[in-house]
Length: 275
Image 1: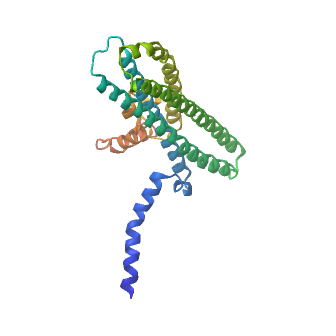
Image 2: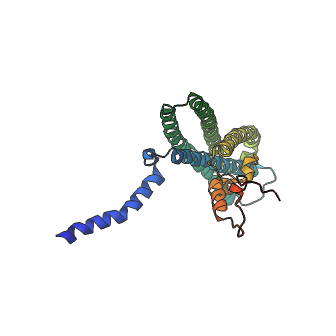
Image 3: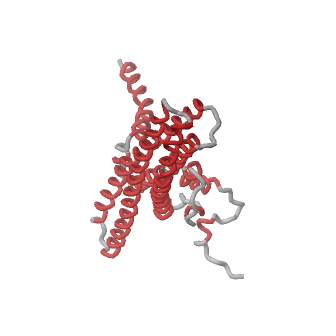
């Protein structure tokens, strides 16, 4: 009888970490139960970092799709029309998928921010020192303003990306049954005119990327941001931006120290000895 009760309990215990991992990866609801304010702050930073990365990818995908369309209608085109059209469809499809991925960062960003600012607002009531409470409130308001800028810019870029993708798809539909020199010449000027739309999209995405990078540099937990982020240098691409806080933290934890050498983090705190 005892064994029959223990077995299901052991199985449930073994499966619990998997269930929690699944919940945390697909939804932010599990993190909402955290009593650690910094855990919630770190989650919001992760969501901001996700916006930065996906905006970088979106910029690349949109530019690739437009460039493929330009090459398709160029007067000097002399390649395989069928293969070129397949490449055009694929590039537009990739850009459309990335638009959905970028759009998906918005609800997660909102959810994470809601948790942080609700908890922060509540904790303001616990201050006994009025000056400290005022400082914390000012910091919260500044942080919220940065977040709202990222949110606004991301939504703006997402809508512009979706509109551009729709136009690119229309051009592909036009060529779908009529991909020849005459039809390409008919829409050549229309395609060239899309460049201004692409440049406008680049500007909106760059704004979201820049604001996200600035947020990470100024709001990241101590030890999580490398010198390049603090100096405001733009990452080389999505891979360079992805996980920059995590890498900085890992590098700090794994940095070797010589015997008797004071770690950089504590060196400033050591008293200077006079000879």
